[in-house]
Amino acid sequence: MDWFYSFAILISSILVLMGLGLPVAFAFFATNIMGLFLFFGGARGVTQMVANFSEAVTTYALAPLPMFLVMGSLFFRSGLGDRVIHALDLAIGNLRGRLSYVTLGSGSIFAALSGSSLANAGMMGTLMAPEMLKRNYKPHMAYGPILGAGSLAVIIPPSTLGVLLGSLAQIDVGALLIAGLLPGLVLVSMFCLLIWVQTTVDPEAAPQYPVPKASGWAKARAVAANILPMGFLIFCVVGTIIMGIATPTESAGLGCMGVIALLLVYRKFRWSVIWQSLDDAMKVTGMTFLIITASTTFSQIFAFSGASNGFISAVTGFDLGPYGALLMMVCVVLVLGMFMDQVSMMLITIPLFMPIANSFGFDPVWFGLILLLAYEIGFTTPPFGMLLYVALGSAPRGTTLRTMAVSAAPYVGLTLLLIVIVVAFPPLALWLPGLMGR
Image 1 (cartoon, rainbow, N blue to C red):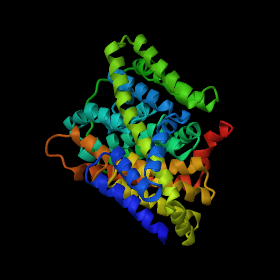
Image 2: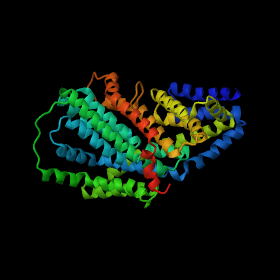
Image 3: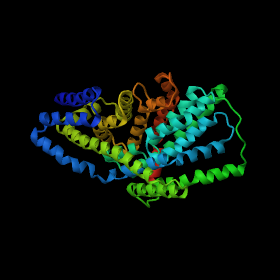
Image 4: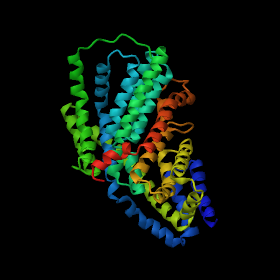
């Protein structure tokens, strides 16, 4: 049981430091320094940690991350998102719960253009929540679609969290991004069905109201002018990867060029928007790279101390079987998701879970997608689900966290159902990566 003491020291140190409010990167660095002196030869270990820095952040798989961030920031800051919402609103017509469908549809498109759940939920909450509440939508019909649409950016490519997971777990980033497309579309369909059921069971949850009638030609023109060009961007990012035309890094560059081209076409190009987007991407990328450097050293300490091999032997020794071990790992992520952000969970669990997944022969892309879905649930589970607080920020004074959690609960349930479907039917996740010749 010697491995257990190493395991307990390293994991508990990180949890305690983060519980005290220390930023994730610094909590890992502090734990690393302690672990280096305990297990890695002290000063020589610190020298090794410094040497890891350049190697950790010069991984080619990380190159798409800043460009995806720039692309999403350009899209949101330029006002292109407003045009998409207006076109969907016009096209849907006077359907009961129309604003909930508009929120979900717009959020799904934004997920394929931004890769950021927080930005997605923040924009939809700011633009759509006040209008839905003004139209007397019940809270679960107003905030549920916002939370559901926000979480979609975790698996619908280009997912920045997917890029980070692929890099840390040494999974083919392109294959992992593409693997989320079909499950993401299935999840969108399930969310639409949920809205339909909610409005059918309780019509007063989303009251109908008079809307100006639009001709079929006007609807088609709005879709052609404001939504189809977004399809061009999605092709630049997703289609080029599937067709083998571009790597994830090249597709990210194409996506940035596509957004800038649309800004020029719609006469929304401003240098101030460019600089703000670059600033947004620089801040997030800098912190992400700092976290990655800390995580790389932590993984080495974890392996060198014997904690990694000991933990794997203990788990496989329980004779849980592959699906029992998978269930255990998903449950661990779900519990951690109640108290941690996604990056923190990823840094703690990947060094533990990937060797176990490899020992059972799990397909790394399939397993990575299941982890992404589990991390996605953590965005909307109380008490620390980050999307809950983003939505709460756009809510009227007096709105409680409980209201947000209740609104998110059906969407969390459907995401859990999707995990079961992906486990039972792996081709849902692996068919598109297979087309890439993987």
